[in-house]
Length: 441
Image (cartoon, rainbow, N blue to C red; front, side, top):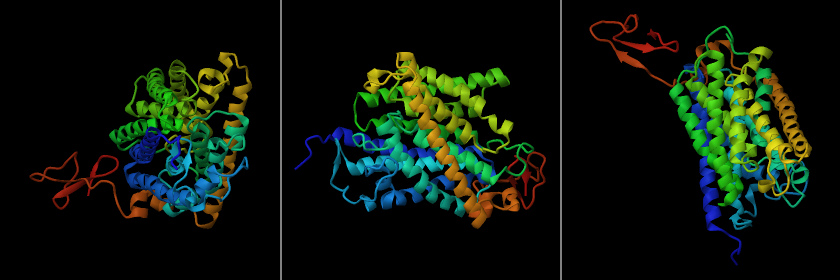
């Protein structure tokens, strides 16, 4: 007999949202790929695509079961190994297999985010192993804590304590940011860090990636309503206005501090806004979302400089954007949550006192500490056994060639009547543009 609660509209929306969230990982690959130097772009993209492969397999084998089954507050059971029992079951108004597919996309992008903190210097095999281990012992349990609701017998953060995280500010962004910080400390600084210029090699690629992330994030946030309903509409609108405000907040800080606003800044600000609104998009109003976006853009623009103050090489600002942005959005709920959307709980400025703020703080710090400690241990073990970092020679020559035997660009141009380009001497009738934009053989 068909489930009388089944909704084809909800199912269609969640299937579309799942595809949107998957698109975010290639978007992240382009975003990160444009930010690294030209000799590392393929490796950066490969790290994201390899994560899709590894996590997808683990999710079917045991990941979904560990994250979304059982009655233990800290970890699921193995009752759905191989997605056993999901083929014809429903979860509310949708097939449970569709819900599992949606959550898989979150599991994929979370470890992929970490890769930006350790760009330019990581062995590819070591990265694949780290993703498999970290996802198993960190992401799956944390997803259980935050996302698994089972009538008060689910995860300890969301279902039992009552902390809000609508779409992953703690489980995804703080989780990945803390792990990124741990790995940056394990691997150490890149050769030439703070001495050599390490500017993004392709800003249009960065903006393309940011646009894909922004587009896909509507599935990330609005899809987390798990229904095509008013809550999804609120999350959708809040996502848009917070992201727009954060992009403006970041470039305003740049203008005041540096005298100019940059394309890298507007892209980074948009991502900071997407991060910050993720936990809060279903609990605050659109007006509060604009305030959150402005705050997140400004705070993250300032926070990315912390790596220079404290001396850790977070290559692509995963800590400053994802961990800090995740904290901002998670704690903001404790200030501006409205009972109209939460069903009862209120933030401090809506008369709720410090109760919800305290719950949000416990959730944020618990995830950050757990992820940091475990990522540091996993990273150290890998480093001491198979080695996590490439050799200095490979790092200087470029990890694309060293690890993948490929280069992202083959920029050869024919010379005309023996004339050189940009002062270079033609060799063999052709020349190649090198990383520093000079022309070499």
